[in-house]
Length: 80
Image (tube, rainbow, N blue to C red):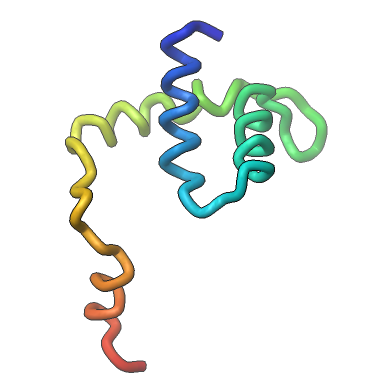
């Protein structure tokens, strides 16, 4: 894995694992690197499959650090 791919992998893990503990983050990291499917078959590494999606997401720009998803969803759904 190239240095750029490693950096991309760490960026991806940080994005998807904000609420995971260190052990869960390691599991995600290992699954992404190995490309092993749930049935034991080897697939293309996850990073390669996600690359087109990540490139499109990068074109959207940086995430707004002041955006509160919970508050947004609470407002959208209101009192249920």
